Image 1 (tube, rainbow, N blue to C red):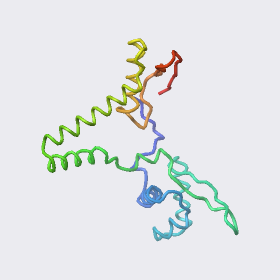
Image 2: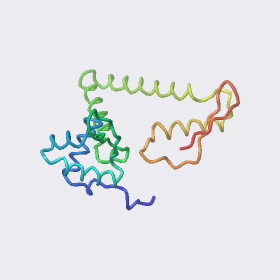
Image 3: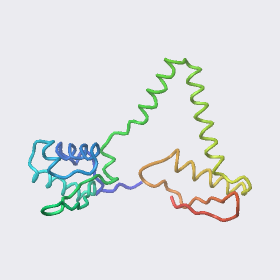
Image 4: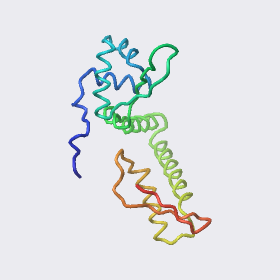
Length: 176
């Protein structure tokens, strides 16, 4: 797996730029003046930070017409900026399971996990055509697994996933 030397890293950003990203994450589309007032720095300083973040493809803008004067640049995050925010899903899951155990005991945890497993199995079963060949059912299952369980911001290395509609032999190809 090769590293992209141009890929932004969290350590590349100063505290002002990290603060700008955080505000954009919390507030969505925002103009430089609003960011400046919240950060207690000049609008020009914020614009310079935004242009630097734009060059790293972490933010972009859309011009919004104003009644008077030039259109405002409304800045927002690009998907690449997500690496700068912690992913707390695993911690949240552990905390929820601990709370279930404290509230309902070990049997409660087992019931919750059993129900979650049943829902996932039903989801998979509803998407895997019954009358397809074993090979095509396995390909569909692998595709579902890679796109749901192994989800990663980068595409999962796999050529293509094929799915067959259970009502016809029409193929649908999904590029990973």
